[in-house]
Length: 100
Image 1 (cartoon, rainbow, N blue to C red):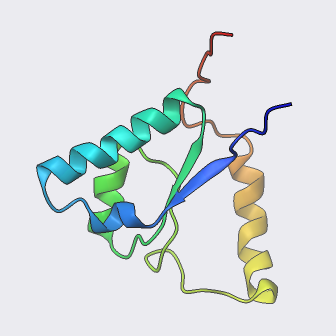
Image 2: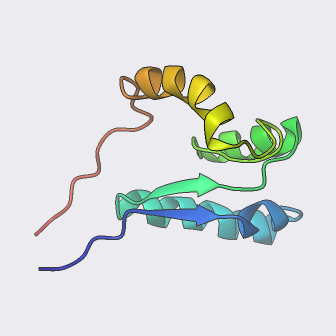
């Protein structure tokens, strides 16, 4: 049985969108991950500009100081429970069809 890669957390993406060539590389990472049905979490989103840039490229899952500083497990649970219930109903893109 082949093990499937569950997802990609990509911190360096936020460091490399300073010019058109690098931005295209970041877009290619997104396209590749979508074609393989691999989720991508963009780490290091620290301001509204980062969020806007990556949202415009098509990314939909983010992590960084723009949203929250690191939290203890005790402090994280009250804010994550509502998001989990809401996000379980949302889909950000149609499923990718794969050929056998």
